[in-house]
Image (cartoon, rainbow, N blue to C red; front, side, top):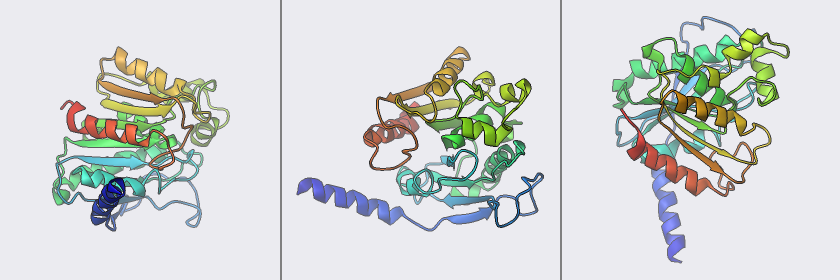
Length: 276
């Protein structure tokens, strides 16, 4: 009975923080590039902002996964809002456009997202030097692309959080669907290298928290191992957590056996492990 009461109290606390997000068009004056999808086929790029009621100055921009064909907006997006808000973190979901043959489109949306949030940081008591990028699966590829290939200090995230991410475009280890949808079925070697983010790590790559399952059959663990090794080689602080089971795509779902472990580890890292 005591456990039930505690659980209900916790659920009630989260519900108090639940709110309707603020929707911000990503490109109010029109995007600089196109994926050539008709209006009824294309995502309208939007930021969903969940301001923290008691902000600690930190913000996280989440890129849901979906293989670069769709977005898992709930369990890899909206469902995490209350959890981050209770930590004092303003949480933002990036509804980014699909590439559909133009591999530059998702990345331009990610850069615009962090630029927009920093420009409006005062609106939600965010510190511009405490803005991180987060992504799951293909969204993890987008997040790690921004982390390793940001075009300027203004769009460099201050930290990165990756859930079972696609990292490499190496055909032996990549997620074939994400690769094909982003850079095509027969990309040249230059394009493969350009979007294999384990090869793009440098001294400006931000600190990282990464989590995955060993038995992930969709995105091989080698993706993360290669990225982790590259981060270490460049002296980038990284916290890596690999759980024995769970497969792929668990996000914030309760049926992931290690949900309590990964969420507690991330909370601790956000509270004590970041280096600024």
